[in-house]
Length: 358
Image (cartoon, rainbow, N blue to C red; front, top):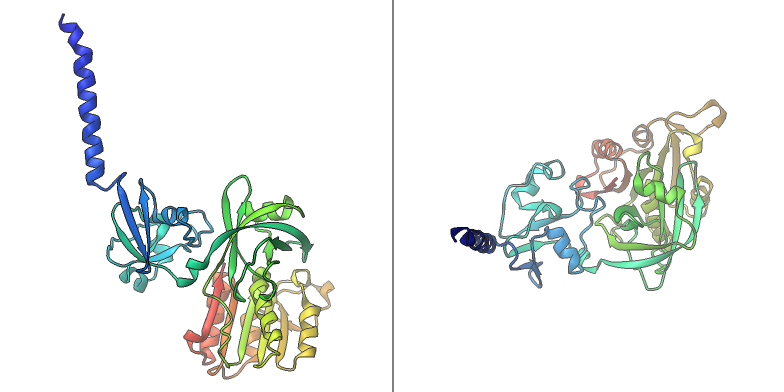
């Protein structure tokens, strides 16, 4: 009859092992209730084993994350106040030495296994999701489109900030600067360049249609016009980097251009330029505004008789002492780093250089 006891013994062992696993999991913080204190005042309670990014998102605190939590964009930063652990290797390319020492982490790489206190930009607490309808699509160049959305509720933002678009069907989000007038709270616009191999830009350029309903989250970003400043402005952009600068210029026009502003825009050939006549007309209307488009490699058929060269060379030729100025830069990391170097050589303090890399 001993063989009758064998299944009972096996079942008993399995039950004991299961109970031990549950006990160890609870001792290690898994599966239990934990709290995330945000900016001292906001407390959210979570259960289960998840990343801080997902936990905050599920509690309607939306940190930017254009890569969807894959640690490839570096935008979902927050600061761990009490509980510090070394960043993972995946985080190191996005964190400076000072940030690491201050406890800054990528929230998508932090597992919430105990109560934690975090610090996020105050502007993040105003971010929320919206449903938007595509009401206009305009082809600006061979690889750049302007998309205009219509919202059912107000979408307030500061000139220079960005929003995130969720690509239907694949739950992928991507960040795009807002290109429209901040006075219009119901029709945000974005300017999107087709990126070879880019899932989101491929959708926008080849599949998005007027009438589509798109999930948008925002606004995000600490790059925006410093409206209380009286310093003259230098603006530099290339490609789709014209988007936030366009929004900033709308605001400056609303103010009547109370301070001088020079806008440098760089492209390779004439086919990569857009809104040229529009900004030249603004320059005619407002004496304080100057628009300087430049081509780095113009073609013979372009018949280009304006500035030629890399945008950094053009900026250097047209400026002298910039110690009393401030700058707004938008473009690729390489372009922005090169522009910062030129501006600092011209005397501009680094704390007066605002930029948005993408």
